[in-house]
Figure 1 (cartoon, rainbow over the protein chains, first blue to last red):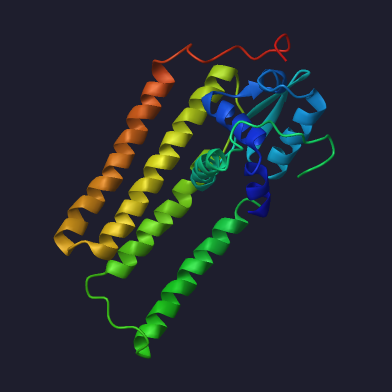
Figure 2 (cartoon, each protein chain N blue to C red; figure 1 turned 90 degrees about the vertical axis):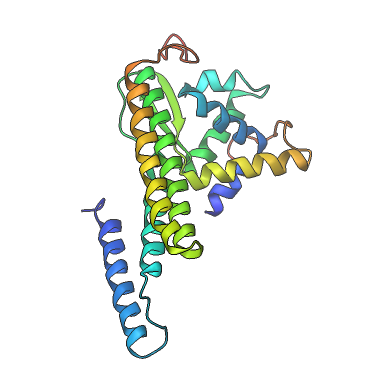
Length: 102
Length: 139
């Protein structure tokens, strides 16, 4: 559960999960929504995978991500988004570097 | 076997809980439950437990549209059964018996109908919208 809280603590990762609510997306499609480098996005994806919040399937050379949230985790995502916005961090992109998990 | 283990553990926990409940009644730790409210609350919470995990059970998918539809259907199923399970438990815990009896059944029946109708609608009609083709050309 600690991994889930850590994953949901970051606004970029929350935004990734919100995008995946609509439909499964490739890593490239997801990255296009954020003004950060691909290695940074890869690190975010790794955190989400580690927390078991997304599922990844390989199709040729393409990695396709889809949502893998329980109802409770989705509710937590909603709460985290609300409190993130209240704390003024709702839209701030994070500066996570590749290889870090915070 | 690895996939069955959590379910076997859960079944053992249910049996152990029932035995503990019976034993606690016998030695007078808890009073009788003539209306069966406690059992109904536990049934509702069991529904919540399993419904919560529905959206997490993912199979392999054939294409983007199928994956999108399966994801939508499983999320609706998960939410509707979780909420109906909470309503079921809450009603049996706090509502008058006739109300709990009728409304709790209606809550679960509603979840069944919502899930069934949405799944059929999802699998038969809707296309396009937010769905973009996922291919190696669109990485």
